[in-house]
Image 1: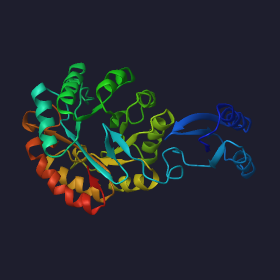
Image 2 (image 1 turned 135 degrees about the vertical axis):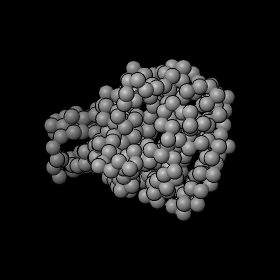
Image 3 (image 1 turned 90 degrees about the vertical axis):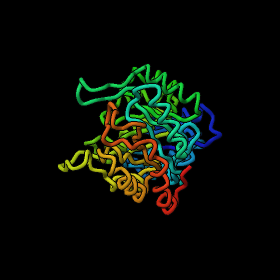
Image 4 (image 1 turned 135 degrees about the horizontal axis):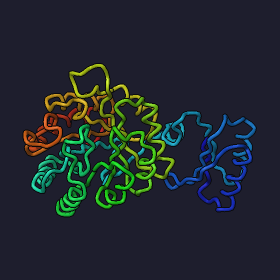
Length: 339
């Protein structure tokens, strides 16, 4: 259950509610949520008498007996859409963002040219991996700290916001110093230690769905972020692993619609990793938009043919303005604002 505390409640009154919840056999946790104090309590179903008793307490605004495994993220807790700002740029609540840039940071000229080209297309948020999880240990792993330094340079010079992936809890402080949002990749969707560490970094978190995760497991992973203090969470559907091998992954547009119905969090789509080939990126982007997505994250590189990571699926940055122009009418038709 979730207990909403009145804005003017005194610390002693909040502690009294916490003690009462403990007395009922629950494990309470006091949290700050959208400038409100709430007490989350895990345990068995709350009886009607206990609900009435808690609601009668002077400092209690309301009690939400939410039975879903994802409580803070559910629309039962917050019916209206959340808006998450990445470097000041809003995602959700009718605001649509496209995040674009290379799979991995390779050289200074590459990341700077990428940023300049996508900015000319109206993009305000740059993606780029300083640290890269790769299936083979022999593949390019990113530039690491040097990549973060290059992102910091581009951010300072061009004023573009940054999204980049964090692979382990020990990397969180360094990445958070540069990034406007931390990305948790598909392989780490259910790395709960990393989720807890990322939640406490003071940055929005973009959470990709695990390639074998159900929607409930994906939303449960988001709940780890929320319950550990990160109120700015963006969900990202990037395709799941199925029997089909004609594409890199199977883009689950039904999951986009379901996540939008079940949670108030913004949901974006990664058509690049779902497609695995650049000619399918735009059609899959259109499918995501039509399913109700609040944004896209797309891989783009100045010279995809020489990219050291995911060369086949990266859009040439010189073509990105045309891609945005092609998508804009559908974004408008879905009642979203590309900002």
